[in-house]
Structures are given as C-alpha cells and as structure tokens.
Amino acid sequence: MSNDLHAIRDAVRTFVDERDWDQFHTPKNLACALSVEVAELLEHFQWLQAGQREELGEAKLEQVRHEMADVMVYLVRIADKLDVDLGAAVIEKMALNRAKYPADMVRGDARKYHEYKDRGINP
Amino acid sequence: MSNDLHAIRDAVRTFVDERDWDQFHTPKNLACALSVEVAELLEHFQWLQAGQREELGEAKLEQVRHEMADVMVYLVRIADKLDVDLGAAVIEKMALNRAKYPADMVRGDARKYHEYKDRGINP
Amino acid sequence: MSNDLHAIRDAVRTFVDERDWDQFHTPKNLACALSVEVAELLEHFQWLQAGQREELGEAKLEQVRHEMADVMVYLVRIADKLDVDLGAAVIEKMALNRAKYPADMVRGDARKYHEYKDRGINP
Amino acid sequence: MSNDLHAIRDAVRTFVDERDWDQFHTPKNLACALSVEVAELLEHFQWLQAGQREELGEAKLEQVRHEMADVMVYLVRIADKLDVDLGAAVIEKMALNRAKYPADMVRGDARKYHEYKDRGINP
Figure 1 (cartoon, rainbow over the protein chains, first blue to last red):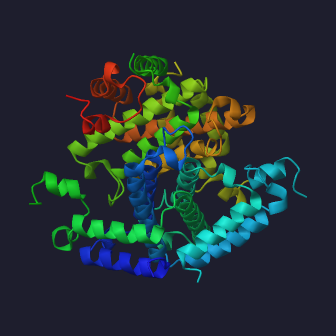
Figure 2: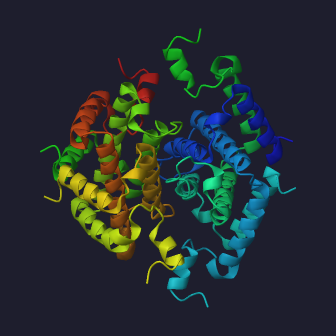
C-alpha cells in the first residue's frame, strides 16, 4: 500500500491542502525545492572516500532515509501539479533507455550514448 | 502495477544487471547522478516567469516527464543500494512533518519550522 | 586586492593546508561540495514569488552573501586542483558565448542556442 | 586584469545588456541557472572512481573549464544583482570559517562544526 505512487500522491495532496500550501507549489518552486533536498542528500556523501553504505554509520543513514523521503515527496508533488503519471513515465523512459543503451554494447561501460556514437561504436 | 515502488526497483535492478553497471553504482555516485538529473529538470523552469505548467508547452512537458522518470529511477536505485524502503520512509517522514508543521499553526505560510520557533510562535 | 582571483586562491590554499584538508579535496568531492553550497543559496529563493532582492530582507541577504562566498571558495578551490586559470577560462567562454548568442539575433529572448537552430532562425 | 572580479562583473553586465537579458535575471532565476551549471560540472565527475584530475582526459578537462567559467559568470551576475561585493564576502566568510574550524582542532578531519560540538570536542 505504502509503495503505491498514487497513494503517496494522495497523502502529499492532503498534507498540502491542510496547510493551504498549494499556493506556493508552482512546478518551478517545487523543482527548486527538489534540488535543495537532493543536495541535502548528497551532502552526506560528499567527503566519503569510497562512497559506500558502510561509511555512513547508522545515525547518518537514518538522516539519509529522511532526505530520500523528502526527495520522493517533492517529486511526486511536481508530478501531481504537472498531471504526470510517474509510474507510466518511468516505464516509458526505461524502454527508451533500453533502446539507447543496448546491453550487448554497453556492458560494463559507463560512457554515455553520445560518446559511443562519437567514437563510432554505434552503427 | 507500474505505480508500485518495488516493481520499479526490480525493473531498474534488471536494467542495471543486464549492463553490468552495478559496479558504478555506489550510493555516492548515484547521489551525484540524481543531482544531475534534478538539474536537468530544473533547467526547463529556470527562465519561466510564473513557473506554471502552461508556460512549458507540450514538447517541453514531454522532456520534463522524462527527466522526472530519470530522477525517480536514480532515487529508487539509491534506496535499493542502501536497503531503504522508500514507501516506508515517506510514511515515516510525513508523520514527522505533520508534527513539525501543525496545520493550525502554519496554514498559508511558507516559512520553515525553525523560523517559527525563532519568532516565538511555537511554545 | 580582495577582488583578485589569485589572491582568493592563495587564501583558500592556506586555509586548507593549515587544516590538512587537501586529502579530502579531490575535484569530484569539491564538485559535490559546490553543488551543496549552491543549493543552500537556492534555498533562500525557492518560495519567493517574484524572486527579487526586495523579498529577501536584510537578515536573509546576509546569509545569501555567505552562501555566495562559500560557492566562490569551492569554485576557486576546484580550479586550483585542476590547474585551471578561472579568469582566463571566463574570458574564453564569454568569447564563445558572444559567438553563440549574437546580440542582434537573441535580443530579449531567453531560448537557448539549439532552440534557435531547431526553429531555423540560425543560418 | 582578467582575474579581477569587478572586471568580470563589468564584462558580464555588458554581455547581458547587449542582449537585453537583464529582464530575465531575477536573483531567483540566476540561482536556478547557477544550480544547472554546477550540475553540468558535476556530471563530468559522477562516475569517476577516485575523482581525480587524471581520470578526466584532456577533452573532458576542456569542457570542465568551460562549465567552471559558466558557474563563475552566474555567480558574479547574482552578486551584481544583489549588490554583493563577492571579494569582500569571501574575506568575511573565511574569517568566520577560521573561527568556526580552528586549525588545531580540526586538522585532518572533515566532520562539520556542529558534529564536533555534538561530540563535546568544543568547549
């Protein structure tokens, strides 16, 4: 239940309406707020050497969980304000990504599609 | 089905494994990638005057949908690598937010909790 | 004197060396830290309606000044670690920008270069 | 000459005025644009393993130089629109940082000030 994007959207909607905050929620303002939350998430990782979970410690991981929740809430809220079905958008985008990065061609390589093309790897 | 966070997590996992990209997916690297995707989303809004949906136009809105999907995919992926249940984290964080911003106190006001406190509005 | 980028670079270098923090200053970590500071700057503007100076108030403006200083410090530090001459890079990039956005063609229009091209405005 | 922040400010001002772009340059919009440019810088580092200069390669380093110039230009522009003297702000903030992170106390340690305090290391 809690994993359903529509249920999260509805819970966020109720939270916002109860506070009369919809007036502040232009998609642009929400995109700014999303950027800020993502940076608060990144902040926990900025000086880690390997960048792995183990380096965080339990207290930090708890904060990271909350930052991730904030990111999710703003993302779901932007989607709501733009009438975007997030789940459908993900399915569509992943199909595009599968076509753009064929598994046989990119296996184990992190360069981006256009870089492949630049280097003549793509037909 | 497509709105289920666990289903999205599994689809992303398959995509990554087919490409042997897990080796690049430290939580730190994924947090960087998430920041980059969020900025690509923000880019569409940066010069809009009111920041509303109508100013985007259909072609831009389509790009925005795809950027939002990218943000979701990286967020779900970080959660997977950190063993975080995103849906549970959202429920938990929203309960904290309800306590932090009581509807009666903050209605129609966008200042942050600590600003209320600073101004003696909180007990 | 205080407006000289080399002087700022040297002051930052001394600050870092006195604390033995150079070991943390990979360009990647610094780019993360820069992102975080820029988000702290953006945070002050996220809910502003017009986004103008007047909406900030003096106390906020003081915080904004400090965030801008942090952004500058990290930018200068990345440049130092990458042996980039920031002043020279700016001159070079602005020459490219003048060629990319000819004043006669783009006056009063915020669309990006590629969008002009897409719409056949460029030759 | 090219390292002087006031000279850069003036050059950016001229560039903007020639294009009649000042109308788009609210501090908020510029803070958004700054975020976007910083993310374009971060993008070059996101998958690097050690995050060091050597991993970039010359072509990437050239792009990184240009992204850094863009960041500088927007930062200088925000300062101009907010009547902030960037050089003076940096000197002031660095004095605060020296007081906040005394060299003797923090040498070789990347934890933040408040974390020291939390752990009772500060008086």
